[in-house]
Image 1 (cartoon, rainbow, N blue to C red):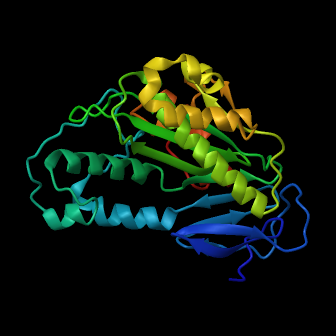
Image 2: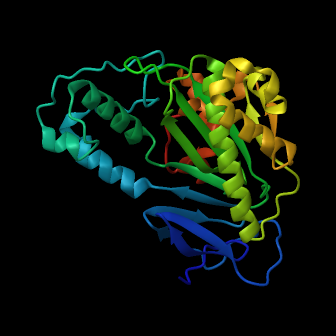
Length: 309
């Protein structure tokens, strides 16, 4: 594949399990991101706006298509500022949704409660059609991660939601938000599982960066808002109550000891990954939304496209 990505010799070359891999043009040494040339406009459904200072990546066309398909007569005309209201626990209703074909085309689980949640998300997307990720050419190519968990949120299983996000050049380059496979009996245990997943992602990104000759000097930073997790990562032997999580915290400890990763404390209010674990109040959602590198196209084009935040 010869399509130029448009910055510092980076071009798409291969796919691995549906993930786009990027590689530098051969024989070019690592250097800060440079201004784009002959850049693509649309690739794999992603849209790009390239300038000498940044790349703006968005999916406006795709979101418009979603809103047209599912927004129409099935949703409110008014956009939602957040995808889920804070402190809202979605009811586990088993009442079937009438239009099964419509719902299944969206999320494959037709219940009334789930469809209400889908309509809320469509309303949120309607108000954020022109938002996307902004990668700065003057930004660092060293990546860092945020790791977080929301303990025991699932009322049926008691399982927690773990999440991480990786940031480079001012915006997210990878993320994960999923229900953990085992039940954590404390916040610390849920955070250990999330931190373990973040550490694995850090190792994968370090390998990818090495292949692409993108230097990552020193260890990769993972931000964590749980002091107990940091203590366990530094010395897991003294934490017998987490014995059944030993594989996870010993893995983190090993990566710390060989200087692949380092873990630093982050105040909960500055924990960007918090947005990926639970519903947040509007002001906190906006803060972490910006922390992901999300901006509106209107902010980049002197207001010609209007965002809602």
